[in-house]
Image 1 (cartoon, rainbow, N blue to C red):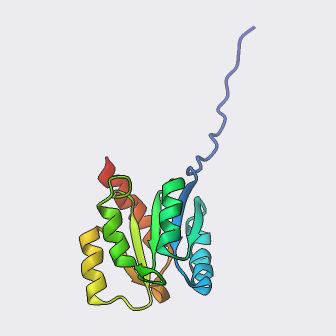
Image 2 (cartoon, helix red, strand yellow):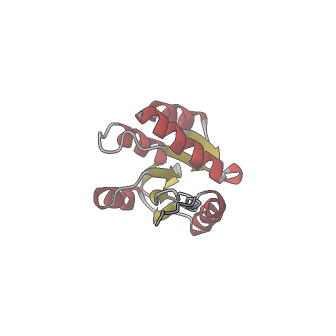
Image 3 (tube, rainbow, N blue to C red):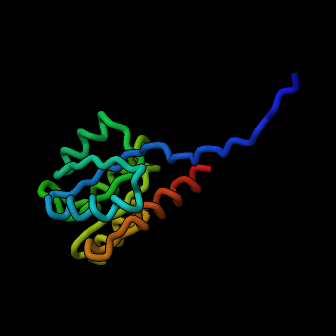
Length: 142
């Protein structure tokens, strides 16, 4: 008996799940960021921290592939935390996008020094910034 073969269409490959630490103290802005990422970044699980201290705890316990960071937080300045992360070998390669109501020239300078991928106002934030930062990060690793 002769065997037959047939082409079976390949299943589309899903992107592996990744996690993003969102450091944002406003619950309203947390929801706004979640909604912005629902459509363009379905492969991304969001973990929220409302302070820099909480973010440090999450980063010590849970690996993340990306960080979204507000600049004005109850216990510090996001741009300073970005510099701290850029000096830590465990986190220096993670893409960071700063999302702030009032991006100032000082914040831009610190963000640039920390290697932040994008600085964007909360009103203009969308999933494309996250996708771009992750793609830039992936290219720099290869």
